[in-house]
Length: 118
Image 1 (cartoon, rainbow, N blue to C red):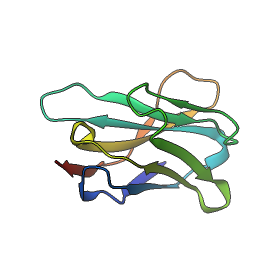
Image 2: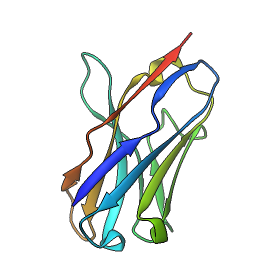
Image 3: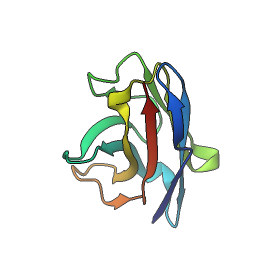
Image 4: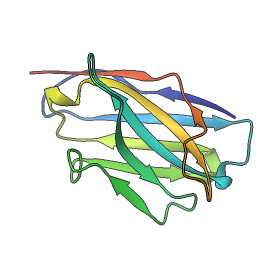
């Protein structure tokens, strides 16, 4: 399985970005998908997750109401729509794939940088 994240960039506070993660090398619908982020000097943290069908979504409290995770199974792609961005959202964002029925994320993308200026 390979994951390719894209869509990061520089945006002003209050702005929006949409991250994409393209999945290949496996059966997309066998995996739940997640987004994580890591800011400089900080541990990687959970941002959002979505079940294989898209029917269930989960968010960190810090992004709830501002970020939306979605997936299009016909395109083997998961998205993270980020609105009302804040400087504290600045981080490298990673997508990850979790085989259904398991507790761990098995595959990780390379990350995409998001920088929010104040």
